Amino acid sequence: MSLGPFSRQEHLVITTLGLEFAVAELLGGALGIWLDKKWETSPWMLVLGVLGGFALGMYRIIRFAQEMDRQGKTAEKENGRY
Image (tube, rainbow, N blue to C red; front, side):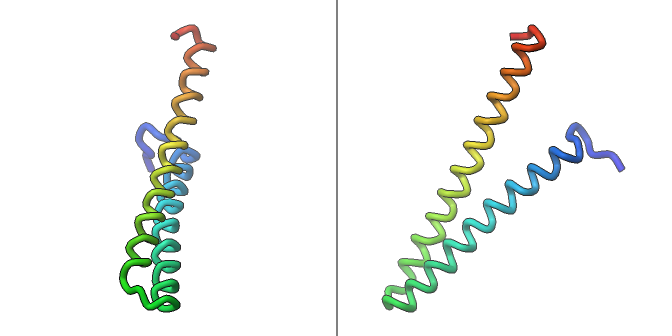
């Protein structure tokens, strides 16, 4: 089975990042539902929870992309391509 331009390890990292993004939104939504029931503010805490989960997920993706960029630049320097 061909994995395309990515190795098996890279596929696992990408999948894990996607799952982290989804879990952040689900947990934010669950927390929002719980707060809505507790404070009777439906649907505002749900909306804020989902938006907060989305923001956290995007933060993780951006940090991951920055780290990958740093690693790529380091590899280029070591190989004399920078």
